[in-house]
Amino acid sequence: MINDLTRTGKALGDPQRVRALAALRGGELCLCRLIALLRLAPSTVSKHMSLLVQAGLVLSRKEGRWVYYRRADGKVAAHVRAALALAETALRDDPQAARDTRALRRIRAADSTELSRCYRASQT
Picture 1: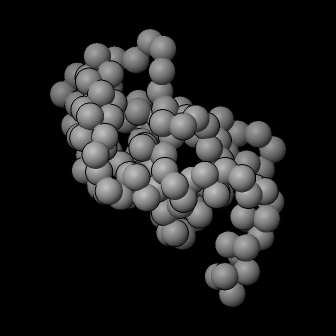
Picture 2: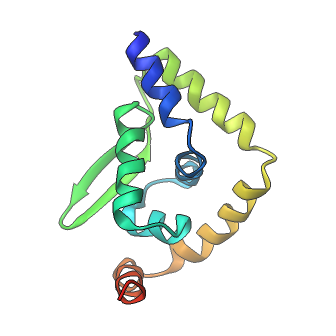
C-alpha cells in the first residue's frame, strides 16, 4: 500500500502529468492529442503517461499504431479515487487547466493523422 501511495504521489508531482490527467476529464485521448496539448516530445509524453498508468490514475489501450488514454474509473483503489478527487478540486479554478480545456476543443477537432504528421514535420 505504501508503494502504491508513493507511486500516486510521484505521478501527481509533475505539472505536465497533472495537465495530462486533467485533459482526460473530457474523455479518452490518443497520445498525439496529448503531445499537441503539452507541446512536448513524444517520448517525454509517453513517459509521463506511463507513470500515470503505473500509479493507476490512467488506463491505456492500443489500437493499431495509436495508444489511447483515459482516466481510471470503476473499481480503483481508495487512494486513487481520493487522488482523482483532489486533482479535480484543485484544477477547478486553475487558469492553466482552463487554457488547456479551450485548446483541447481545437485539438479534439483536428484529425489524428494530421496532428501526428504536423508534429513529425516540426521536429525536422
